Length: 244
Image (cartoon, rainbow, N blue to C red; front, top):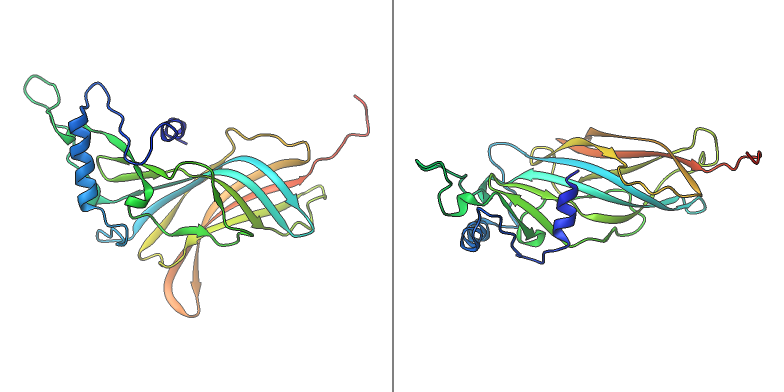
């Protein structure tokens, strides 16, 4: 998880700019203009194969477990990474003195409003309510066209909680997939599930977690449909009967 990105996006709005010691304001504007000119949010950036989207999740908190409704609410950062070759700008070159040439090639990356880019229509398939975005809608785009988008989300989803109070706990799986595209247009790569900054709750225990990508085939259609699954094994926290 690129934790530095999270800190950066809270300091920048829309097309805000960060210039390093080797990047000038004009360099960044040139790179940005190339992206703005070539970006088309409505067109999938296919380049001889499906767009490969890497997907991972970092769980921050379990906010609520509603056994009556069969719902769990969490806060998590979901990391989406893909490459849009049409948005790349040329990479840095070196002159004879060894210093970088002027121009957008000196710019390694910059933040951008996600609405200005094509982004994969990957959504949760089993939400109880619409996920709530808790962070600015900013992505980081690199010179080779790689896009990194890390929304911080409040997600409430459905789960069978029959074993929530049992020793083994309940397995709650949050399922993600493309809403309109099959695997020939958008493929999914499982990049794991973590809990680096997980906040313990006195009501719940997080016993384990894992992630996987499952490719589904339906009777209606010959195309593959990849699904990313994030599973959390949780149970009601038990109180010890002993005072020590």
